[in-house]
Length: 349
Image 1 (cartoon, rainbow, N blue to C red):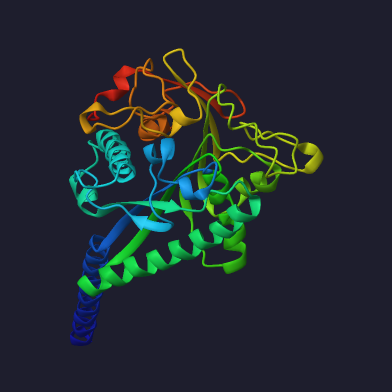
Image 2: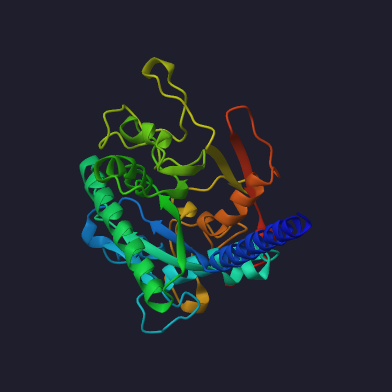
């Protein structure tokens, strides 16, 4: 009887040891799998309407913004400039590079292993820029399809390098003027194509708020939305051509008559530079850059303390100050953020 009891105890100990061993193996595998998860951060810049015609996209003041050829184009070597590059590409790199410098300055305290486990890529999305809601809708579908294609390409590229790596794609869209309505129309594209993509952050700068697209802020495709505007931006509100509304608006407002509500994920930010209110162009376009001998941009005032950089460069700082509750807000999630020369510290002329 005693021998049987001893045998039983030995079997129990053996089974327990086996269970512990298996758990350790699974725990180790789980940790290894976690180590092979990689964040791929896509940031896409979308320009606004191009007037008087789309053929002028690289002429006049249009060349002083983040812009490139039509479609989704990855911008490589943002820190490197080539004298032979056209002005629009030099400008695109300069704005994106300094945006990234501010972003890195904010993230400098992030643990090194998290930094090593992520990759950042920048893109422009070019559309025809026509002042037409139909055009914006059509180009939004192209944007959706090209994002889906790019995600598949990214996953394949990483899979070819390392079979077991798990890629998590985080998409940020930064859009100026009607480029914001191109982005908002992604809600319709998601409903049509059902590829389950998500835009982690949608940042609108001077986007005309119109009844045709305002409801899309409630779509699940957008995780967080930041509507950045200036109360002196006349271009944002004068469009009555490409909308059924009598005028466009700067902010999203509750409309109980039409059952339109504002989600908590939307934050609306009035931006100022010192005590001045930026214009439509100063939100997005680079001013004169004497080191690169660019022709003076007539839609940008030299008197602004952040000259020659547009507000879009400081978006990471603006969002960071809001998320950390460093600026006050009212009950409707409306903020006022004042930029000044201290914001220039991390960036380079």
